[in-house]
Length: 114
Length: 114
Image 1 (tube, rainbow over the protein chains, first blue to last red):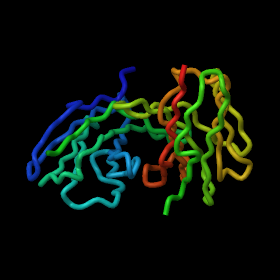
Image 2: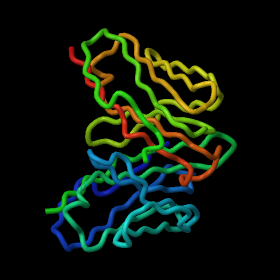
Image 3: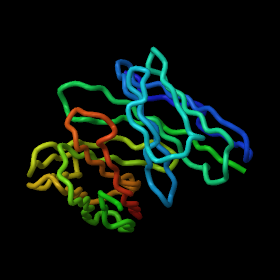
Image 4: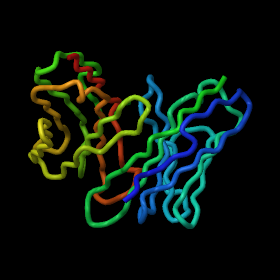
């Protein structure tokens, strides 16, 4: 079974621009979560989508948004980029069944804002 | 407030040494996961523990869930350079639930020198 894929792997943008990141979950997984990871803050939860609906949202400004498509693929968008948005953005997928809640991560997108 | 504390934050040891990483909380979790992350990559799920007092082994790695399900430890025997990475623990409050009930520690950065 293929793992979680994220594109692009690396991105360099300028302050004020916007960016869209893409995530394809493991086949059969309907939940996709997004995280921002920085050396100082660790993994911070952005939002979670399940069946095209946002189920949970972290404490991030409205510049960060996301969506999920009917095939469970997800995108996140960051508008008006700031230097502090430079981070590794991770996507994780989960399935819901009888087992404990587990997340499977993609390789991440390294975003650098200059 | 960090709800899941990991210690130590950094650990640098020689090949062949043993080590233990701790994950502590005042909250009770329905399950707890351990991940390992290498630089520039996403976290990889190592193990999930569910039952209080549960012990799971993965080759030289031993994971234990506290009796009260508030803490966990990861013990590595005879560490090797390939064990180098960031070890993250994540606690879930809701068995089989959603990401909204999953919390990550800030991680322990392990370096094993040959």
